[in-house]
Length: 169
Ligand SMILES: Cc1cc2nc3c(=O)[nH]c(=O)nc-3n(C[C@H](O)[C@H](O)[C@H](O)COP(=O)(O)O)c2cc1C
Image 1: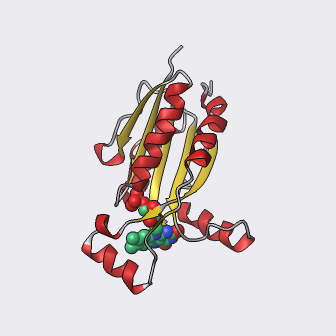
Image 2: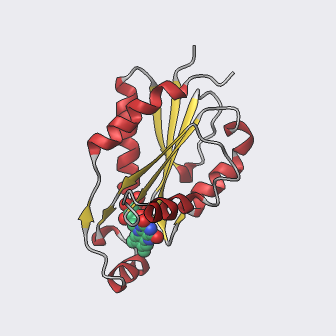
Image 3: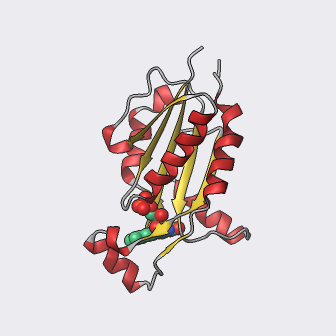
């Protein structure tokens, strides 16, 4: 049986890539052969048993290259177990409003794919890694510099999702 898993991610300032790497490491330790690949490389999904796709959030949406990736490989992705993870900093609460708002980050993705699992992870704001424009926006909205990533939560999700990554047919 084939045990290859692709973890691909879209990032602007690196924090989503580090979350993807942590997921990849957890799955590798559970015996899978995992490739963690930036989405801009448009990794083909052939030969993988499952695909995990992650994106940072900018201005209330997944990054466009992550949506484009799903559109490009939509047909193949719909024959595989696909899990989605989102890395963001607003709407982190357990209240209905926060949940509704963060769910809307995937509005462009939902019509395209039916994931076996979804996660929302608190991310990181690091001014030094932002583009000029993003830094300007972050400062205008007085976003604090912070790293809220919870590595045990990321790891626990990778472990939780693993049984769902088996063949769909
Ligand atoms: C310009 C800008 C806009 C952002 N917009 C949102 C947003 O609408 N909602 C949210 O939850 N987080 C937002 N964030 C937070 C990022 O999603 C968070 O910092 C994430 O960890 C970034 O991932 P990256 O380092 O992989 O780019 C924004 C950050 C920046 C710099």
